[in-house]
Each structure stands twice: as C-alpha cells, then as structure tokens.
Length: 364
Image (cartoon, rainbow, N blue to C red; front, side):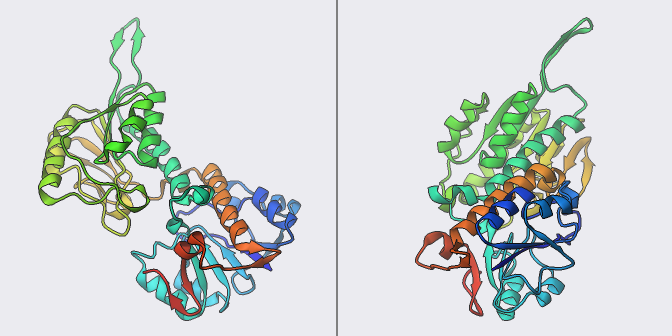
C-alpha cells in the first residue's frame, strides 16, 4: 500500500499533513510512503529529511497513492486527479461543503474528514480539531498582545506602576482555554465566559475569573455548546457588551459545528469599548463572533482594532504540522492492518469519520 503526502495548494496554507518522523513510523510498519516534492518546505521540513525516513520524493502523489494525506480539502482540479478507489484524509468540513463531498463520492474516493473525529477517549490522539485549536488559541493571545498599545503584565518601573491589561475570552473550548493560559502567562488579568457551566472549573484552574452572566446553555454532542434561545442570546449579548467595555482585549472563540458562528459582540458593544482596545475573532472563518469582523482582514471600528485573521494554525506551521501529523498517523494506525487499509464500519471512529465510500455520501 502506498501512502502519499500531497503538497498543499490552498492560498496561504503552510502546513503539511505528515512530517518526517511520522513518515518514518509508517515506513517502519511496512507501508510505502511517497511525498510530493517540497510538500514540507513551508513548514521547514526538507525533502531530504523525508528521504532519510524512508520516503521517496515524487512530482505528484494524487494519481498513484492508495491513501492521500492532506491538510486542506482538495480543489476541483485535485479531485479530478485522485484515483477512483483511493482514500483521502483531510479537513473536509462535510457539514458546510456539500458540493465537495458529492464530487468525492462521484469520483469513487473514500474520504475521511479530520474534523469529524468523534470526541471519545480512544480517539483523542486523532483529534485534529483540538490540536489545531490549541495553536489558534495561543496565536490569538499573541495577536491581542501585539496589537494592544499596552503591556499585558503589571510593571513597576522608575516611571511608576503600570496596571496589567484586562483580557476577556469568550468561549472556553480548547482554543479559549489556550488563549486564557497564554494571556495569563503574559501577565494579563483574564476573565472568561461560556454558556456551559461545566467549564467553570477549567477556567479557574488556569487563573482566570469565570463570569457568571446568568445565561446557561447546554452542552451538545462532542462537548460543543448548543445555540441559545433568542431571549437568552439577547441577554448574553447585553452582558458581554458590559464586560467588553471594561476590557482592553477581547478574544472570541465560540463555534457551533455546521452553523455560522454565534454573534456575541454586537456593533453597539464595539462602539462602547475604549479606543485602542483589541478584538481577536478566532471564529472569523465561520463568519465571526463579532459584528465588526471582516474575515481575513484587520480593521478599525470606532478606534477598536478588530482582527479577523484566517487559518491561524498555518502561521505556526512547524508545531501545527507536527501536531496534525500525529493526529493523521493515529488515524492511519487505526485503519491500517498488516500493511493494508481495513475499514470496519462497526467501529465508531471509522463510521463517524468516513464521509464518502463506495460512491456514496455517508455524511453531509
């Protein structure tokens, strides 16, 4: 069986699906690996590093590989070059990419989506959403610190004492918790809000204050928050606006799978914030949690800097690739037996992660 590592073609994508160490592990288990020329270059993994681990470098892997590993979903042109009967592993986002999923099914490609890994204990090593959210949360806090015209920590200097920055984090999933931890390490005073009361202990364990906003939602499948009722959502927005006015930086991370990001920071809330404040919207790819967010751009609204940068994990390609690679390797190890791909649809991981198979769409 041949596993192929494709070079990413999406604009701005610098990650690679498998790093040399993972390739070495696959090669050691009797699997042949081909890596597309310069596939890891943007993440600082040279072709000769892959060759030393037993891979061969190829001009292309899409037509020949039995299993193709990618980060981003393939383009139409890439789908046309995938061999019928081959298997694809990538971030496919089937809930919002119905046309892509149908195209893969029509091509006869079996596909596994790394954002569909079930949130169960034995699948944790494969959880790419969590690994990449960790990168995004870390980078989000750094962006807030970079754009804020203030120190994050309290400083005592000959020129007087400087008060620490106040950071508000909305959403306490993986990205939010990492943003909290990073902002705290930088010395900021951090508060956080989430509609799931179960995360309060995690927030407080990181040294942040959990805001009791008198709005309590439920936890859905996979630990994600479910949408609030219209009345609850209005109260949530009002209370967030009040706390945002007192904050120097707001980092938003709230996402609901398969749906637009919930609007948490309204235009009125932005207008009520102090000039020079910063909003980092980590949900920009799903439309954003802030009404002033323009996905892919950094804008200034009423003196407030609103950052809607996309694909933050790609801005840290070395560690993001290493983490994603471990996720992909774990999934491959689950699917491969004696050097061959074995699909057991009685198994929850295989069943929930597989998007297309045998010409059919399994998840849409």
